[in-house]
Image (tube, rainbow, N blue to C red; front, side, top):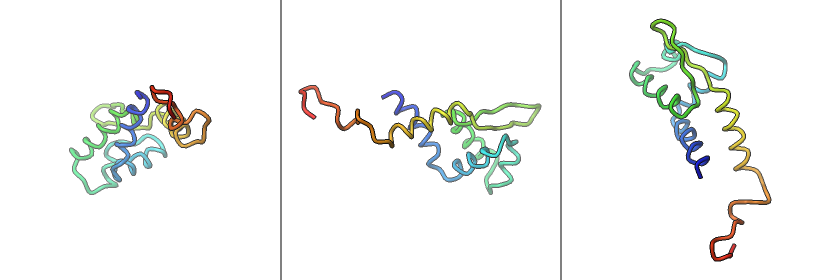
Length: 106
C-alpha cells in the first residue's frame, strides 16, 4: 500500500494543468524559475507554491545559484513512476482483484 500512497502524491501534483505544463517544460532540461514564470500569467508566490508541491512529491529537484533557483526533473523518480504506472496498467497473473480475502474467497 505504501507504493500506492507514494505515487498517488505525484499523480495528485500532476492533476493541476499548470504543474503538468511545468513538468513538460522541464522535460527539455533544467530551467530557472524566472524562465518558468515567463510562460504563465501567475505571481512569483503562486509559482513557488506549484514548485513546492512538485518538489515535495519528488518529481522535481531544485538547486540554488546565488539568488536564482533552478529546477529539473528527478530522473530516478520518473523512472520509478514509469515502472509503477506500467505495473498497475499491465495485465498480470497476480492481479489485485484475484487476491483471496481472509475467508479464502475470491
